[in-house]
Length: 170
Image (cartoon, rainbow, N blue to C red; front, side):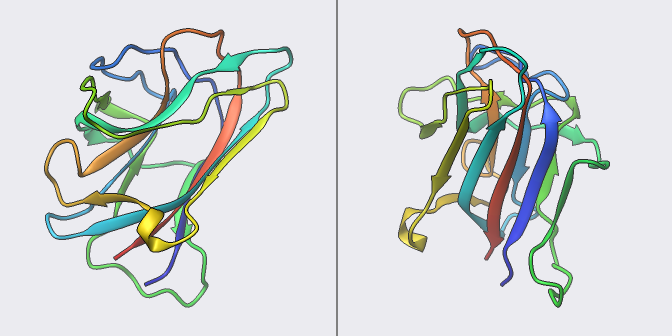
Protein backbone atom coordinates (compact mmCIF):
# COMPACT_ATOMS: atom_id res chain seq x y z
CA UNK A 1 0.00 0.00 0.00
CA UNK A 2 1.02 3.61 -0.31
CA UNK A 3 1.49 6.12 2.46
CA UNK A 4 -0.75 9.18 2.54
CA UNK A 5 -0.50 12.64 4.12
CA UNK A 6 -3.47 14.32 5.80
CA UNK A 7 -2.60 17.93 6.53
CA UNK A 8 -4.19 21.09 7.86
CA UNK A 9 -2.18 24.13 6.82
CA UNK A 10 -3.28 26.45 9.62
CA UNK A 11 -5.88 26.31 12.40
CA UNK A 12 -6.42 27.39 15.99
CA UNK A 13 -7.50 24.49 18.20
CA UNK A 14 -10.04 25.06 20.96
CA UNK A 15 -9.35 23.62 24.42
CA UNK A 16 -12.12 21.02 24.75
CA UNK A 17 -12.98 18.60 27.55
CA UNK A 18 -13.05 14.87 26.91
CA UNK A 19 -16.44 13.55 25.77
CA UNK A 20 -17.44 16.91 24.23
CA UNK A 21 -18.08 17.36 20.50
CA UNK A 22 -15.16 19.20 18.90
CA UNK A 23 -15.95 22.47 17.10
CA UNK A 24 -15.37 22.68 13.36
CA UNK A 25 -11.93 23.87 12.17
CA UNK A 26 -10.34 23.16 15.60
CA UNK A 27 -9.32 19.52 15.08
CA UNK A 28 -8.13 16.91 12.58
CA UNK A 29 -10.02 13.61 12.47
CA UNK A 30 -9.02 10.42 10.67
CA UNK A 31 -11.03 7.21 10.39
CA UNK A 32 -11.31 3.96 8.48
CA UNK A 33 -13.36 4.03 5.29
CA UNK A 34 -14.98 0.61 5.74
CA UNK A 35 -15.68 -2.07 8.33
CA UNK A 36 -12.62 -4.05 7.21
CA UNK A 37 -10.13 -1.25 6.55
CA UNK A 38 -7.16 -0.67 8.84
CA UNK A 39 -4.91 2.40 8.94
CA UNK A 40 -1.48 2.68 10.51
CA UNK A 41 -0.60 6.21 11.62
CA UNK A 42 3.18 6.46 11.42
CA UNK A 43 3.91 10.17 11.96
CA UNK A 44 2.27 13.24 13.44
CA UNK A 45 3.96 16.63 13.26
CA UNK A 46 2.69 19.92 14.70
CA UNK A 47 4.21 23.31 13.93
CA UNK A 48 3.51 26.50 15.84
CA UNK A 49 2.37 29.59 13.94
CA UNK A 50 1.28 31.80 16.86
CA UNK A 51 2.59 35.37 17.16
CA UNK A 52 3.09 35.06 20.94
CA UNK A 53 3.74 32.29 23.45
CA UNK A 54 0.79 29.88 23.60
CA UNK A 55 0.82 26.41 25.14
CA UNK A 56 -1.20 23.99 23.03
CA UNK A 57 -2.07 20.91 25.10
CA UNK A 58 -2.63 18.71 22.06
CA UNK A 59 -3.71 15.08 22.14
CA UNK A 60 -4.07 12.47 19.45
CA UNK A 61 -6.71 10.19 20.91
CA UNK A 62 -9.37 7.70 20.01
CA UNK A 63 -12.87 9.11 19.56
CA UNK A 64 -15.75 7.92 21.73
CA UNK A 65 -18.26 9.49 19.32
CA UNK A 66 -17.41 9.53 15.61
CA UNK A 67 -17.70 12.59 13.37
CA UNK A 68 -21.21 12.68 11.89
CA UNK A 69 -21.48 13.61 8.20
CA UNK A 70 -17.88 14.79 7.71
CA UNK A 71 -17.40 17.80 5.42
CA UNK A 72 -15.11 17.18 2.44
CA UNK A 73 -11.65 18.71 2.83
CA UNK A 74 -10.99 21.94 0.92
CA UNK A 75 -7.66 23.62 0.10
CA UNK A 76 -5.35 24.48 1.77
CA UNK A 77 -6.17 21.32 3.79
CA UNK A 78 -5.78 17.99 2.07
CA UNK A 79 -5.30 14.24 2.09
CA UNK A 80 -3.47 12.44 -0.68
CA UNK A 81 -0.97 9.74 -1.56
CA UNK A 82 2.74 10.39 -1.21
CA UNK A 83 3.65 8.28 -4.27
CA UNK A 84 2.47 9.56 -7.65
CA UNK A 85 1.60 6.10 -8.99
CA UNK A 86 -0.73 5.14 -6.16
CA UNK A 87 -3.84 3.25 -7.25
CA UNK A 88 -7.29 4.38 -6.11
CA UNK A 89 -8.43 2.84 -2.82
CA UNK A 90 -11.53 0.63 -2.67
CA UNK A 91 -12.48 2.44 0.56
CA UNK A 92 -11.19 5.98 1.01
CA UNK A 93 -10.21 6.80 4.61
CA UNK A 94 -12.38 9.48 6.24
CA UNK A 95 -10.37 12.61 7.04
CA UNK A 96 -12.00 15.85 8.09
CA UNK A 97 -11.64 19.11 9.97
CA UNK A 98 -15.42 19.75 10.05
CA UNK A 99 -18.60 17.70 10.32
CA UNK A 100 -22.31 18.15 11.02
CA UNK A 101 -21.45 16.99 14.55
CA UNK A 102 -17.76 16.93 15.45
CA UNK A 103 -16.11 13.87 16.99
CA UNK A 104 -15.76 13.52 20.76
CA UNK A 105 -12.41 12.51 22.21
CA UNK A 106 -12.59 9.50 24.53
CA UNK A 107 -13.27 10.18 28.20
CA UNK A 108 -12.10 6.81 29.53
CA UNK A 109 -8.78 6.25 31.27
CA UNK A 110 -8.28 2.86 29.58
CA UNK A 111 -8.10 4.32 26.06
CA UNK A 112 -4.84 5.28 24.33
CA UNK A 113 -3.77 8.90 23.81
CA UNK A 114 -0.62 10.59 22.59
CA UNK A 115 0.38 13.77 24.41
CA UNK A 116 1.75 16.23 21.84
CA UNK A 117 1.85 19.44 23.92
CA UNK A 118 4.05 22.27 22.64
CA UNK A 119 4.49 26.04 22.53
CA UNK A 120 2.72 27.28 19.41
CA UNK A 121 5.06 30.30 19.28
CA UNK A 122 7.34 28.63 16.76
CA UNK A 123 7.53 25.28 18.55
CA UNK A 124 7.53 21.95 16.75
CA UNK A 125 6.56 18.51 18.02
CA UNK A 126 6.93 15.31 16.05
CA UNK A 127 5.86 11.79 16.94
CA UNK A 128 7.08 8.96 14.72
CA UNK A 129 6.57 5.20 14.82
CA UNK A 130 9.91 3.56 14.07
CA UNK A 131 8.33 0.26 13.02
CA UNK A 132 4.87 -1.05 12.14
CA UNK A 133 4.71 -2.55 15.65
CA UNK A 134 4.78 1.00 17.05
CA UNK A 135 2.19 2.50 14.67
CA UNK A 136 -1.09 3.91 15.94
CA UNK A 137 -3.75 1.60 14.48
CA UNK A 138 -7.25 2.55 13.40
CA UNK A 139 -9.56 -0.31 12.39
CA UNK A 140 -13.07 -0.70 10.94
CA UNK A 141 -16.16 1.27 11.91
CA UNK A 142 -16.55 0.42 15.61
CA UNK A 143 -16.54 3.30 18.08
CA UNK A 144 -13.27 3.82 20.01
CA UNK A 145 -11.02 2.02 17.50
CA UNK A 146 -12.16 3.28 14.09
CA UNK A 147 -11.48 7.02 14.41
CA UNK A 148 -8.91 9.20 16.14
CA UNK A 149 -8.56 12.95 16.33
CA UNK A 150 -5.90 15.55 16.98
CA UNK A 151 -7.35 18.19 19.28
CA UNK A 152 -6.58 20.46 22.23
CA UNK A 153 -7.29 19.34 25.79
CA UNK A 154 -8.47 21.84 28.41
CA UNK A 155 -5.88 24.21 29.85
CA UNK A 156 -3.19 26.32 28.27
CA UNK A 157 -3.86 29.26 25.99
CA UNK A 158 -4.01 27.78 22.49
CA UNK A 159 -2.37 29.37 19.47
CA UNK A 160 -2.35 29.07 15.70
CA UNK A 161 -0.69 25.93 14.33
CA UNK A 162 -0.40 23.62 11.33
CA UNK A 163 -0.13 19.84 11.34
CA UNK A 164 0.23 16.73 9.23
CA UNK A 165 -0.52 13.07 9.82
CA UNK A 166 1.25 10.44 7.70
CA UNK A 167 -0.57 7.13 7.56
CA UNK A 168 -0.84 3.96 5.52
CA UNK A 169 -4.10 2.19 4.62
CA UNK A 170 -3.66 -1.58 5.00
